[in-house]
Image (cartoon, rainbow, N blue to C red; front, side, top):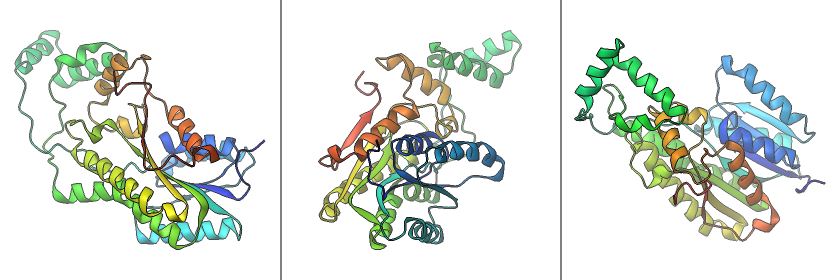
Length: 309
């Protein structure tokens, strides 16, 4: 028995991998129609199409759009596609903002740690380059060895964050949530009881080297979500933020030093494992239910207790 009305749709921004894809699978399996917006190159489409075919096999409505969800033209294309596929009765019950597009650059050049010369000498004594030595330590970190604690800052090269990097990241991963809510609302596509969900991380309050722009975006996302929760409530829209624990997603893997981040999370998490995309998708599903209608303006941690450990 489906948990959702036949006319309900989920619009997932950034749904070809990670949290977005897991949420698309979960919501479709539970009986909701799904539209996924993603931006991927042709070389990735074979894998993505297989994933989407599995979702279609659930027998619910499904379609995807491969375009830039952050431009006015892309937003218009999505809204036109929704209006065409939803018909006169279909409505957006869930908007999930899972866009991962930002700049990962430090705000200042790193000063080599005091241990750097010793580590360089160790690498030389072993007959390996320092780069190979760092990669070996990262592999051990992936396996749970805490050797990453002996290393200094991750090498980001010469890149330093600038104003344009910051502005693009804040819009892409933060304030674009509001733009989307306003556009969907203006088009009259939201259900009478709609749920807006954004995704943040512990970087919203912890400073990680190279994460300043994304951290600023996540803080903006949380602020915007609170404003949506208050000002759109008379229109039947609830807005909440999920803070996932460290999760092995494609978005995490592009962060320099992510192996060390995952190793640290495993050591700290009370359950001794990382958060999974499915853990987060399950809570997206819970917030989509009628019973969650009184949850509004909240930040909900989905991390197994990692944050408090």
